Image 1: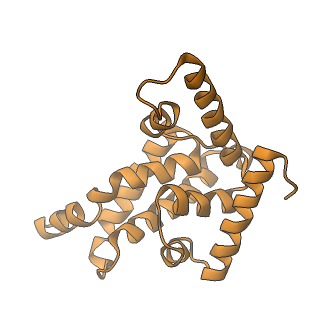
Image 2: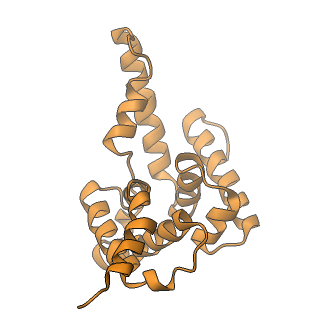
Length: 178
């Protein structure tokens, strides 16, 4: 198929700066590095085919919307729904969580690793609608409006899902009733 150089340049300008965020979101939603790579590849193809339809605005939100939609369609096609709820941090983020102090004691390192793993497991155990908005807010640091646009939800629903996700995380981590 023939694509002109202006479409290629526009794709490089709009999509590629957000490739890391795209992978992180796909990884959280899929729970697997290999699956996230497949999802981002498919999302990249979708974005390239649709680049002429990008009217400008927030390119990050546009890219993450494509990745979100691609993730769910890819997961529905390739994995049973029981497996969709798993999630994990990428290696770089895990390393930052596991090593917050440059010179921690062995005990401090072990405690930090256990705490980080506990948080990752609690987040992975969240139902997909809650995990999705929490990842977009806390990891990608998106505004409520951007999350609403990406997820195709009213902003009030986004806010309530984030609040509910935080309560579920607190309940999971501290035994507080949700």
